[in-house]
Image (cartoon, rainbow, N blue to C red; front, side, top):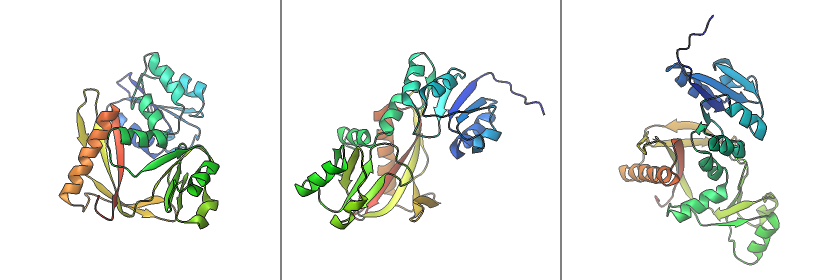
Length: 264
């Protein structure tokens, strides 16, 4: 069957997972042509996009050449080659969210420093370059148990995160650039999705609660709207607004929060 497309606008989506598929489906309402880059030719978005390109989204040249084919670029995954995106932006390609923001979000250490700089509530943390540095800091009483170690890059869905409750858990420490933060006694995890356009206008969805499958480290159930109190919902919305505004970001951002057992 011939595909009827009335727009010549080409939207490039790096990675064709579930989010990429939903974005491509939404774009079809405006007759926007969608181009997908993904290493898996059977990825969810491959069958519903206008054009599929098989390729590694961590490879500079692959991302750069893909970006030259389209009018605007976005992505449905964090772990992609930002150097190629920065070059494409320099050459005039519109990319949302901005590559500079993605580069910050890819690094949990930079994220934490951003929170600290802008007085956004977050647990106390320190940065370390190796497992040996962390062990030395423990021996010097600079780190107290319990704590959480997070690799600064490449972690997702609970991967790259270890909870160290006592010296008996030190065998679980990971090698690599890490942040170590105080373990928070968690009551609940909630999140809010907020959008910001090129004019700086923002709009958010209601706060949702997340229940996790602790074996799979994945969300099992979402409760929307949240059952949390009005003050908590208001504070979360204001924090999400502050984060996306301070970032100067264009696009859609999911901001995830822990509510601790004291209600903070």
